[in-house]
Length: 283
Image (tube, rainbow, N blue to C red; front, side, top):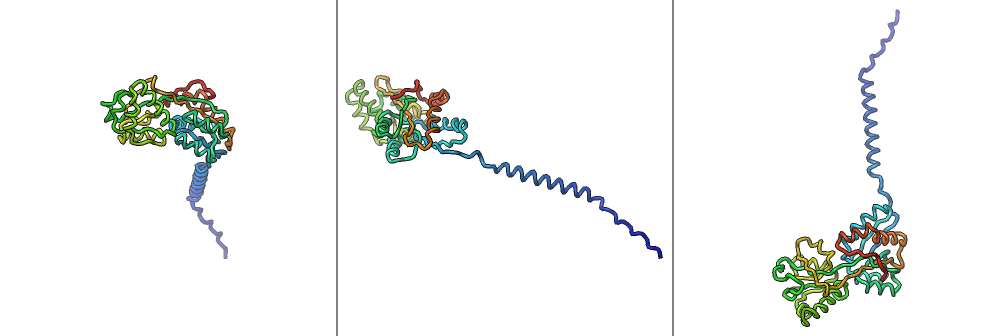
């Protein structure tokens, strides 16, 4: 009995298409996995954290400047600590870790220099005190000489530079605007604040009628206050020195920051923020 040859089973014509489909899905899965890994790659590692202590009035200028500095020094993270100069002075006296200190006056910087806390300070900017008046009082207080008309005045504490500058201004005004000018103004003081931004904030919010702040701060108040110049014969000039902290953990980066502040780009940022930027000088 002859055996019929076994018939070959028909091949599934869909198999090549299935195989190609499986390969396509596999390739797509691998591509998506690769893209996911790329998205999760960590950013460039930060090699060190540069701690900069700076007077409150430098907030806007130094914040912008720190962004410029980070782009030029990608391995350095800039940590800005803003407070009243006297607060920062106290923190440094108590051993706070910092690399750079920028003050709103020479007095606190010189005290730290004598104590060996900082080295070789350089004056990098100047500022001009101005009178700010709440909008509801703008009609009655149109010049610095009108300040005694205010019912509620806020100034800085004497320990903070703007507070000390304010007292000097009032003393000078008594020589030109009447011997009782300072006394008339001080009789209206309802609060003394720890930094200049607190003075500005309370006036802009209507919690006070007037106060004395730096011109560089007035842009932060937008339309909340009127800004009046103080006569040159009455006003004082605020000088800002900057120095390396003697026990800086990152002296090279600290020097790089100081150089950045003194550079043409740094000086342009300071000028845009309302500071006067004379050639850097040592006190």
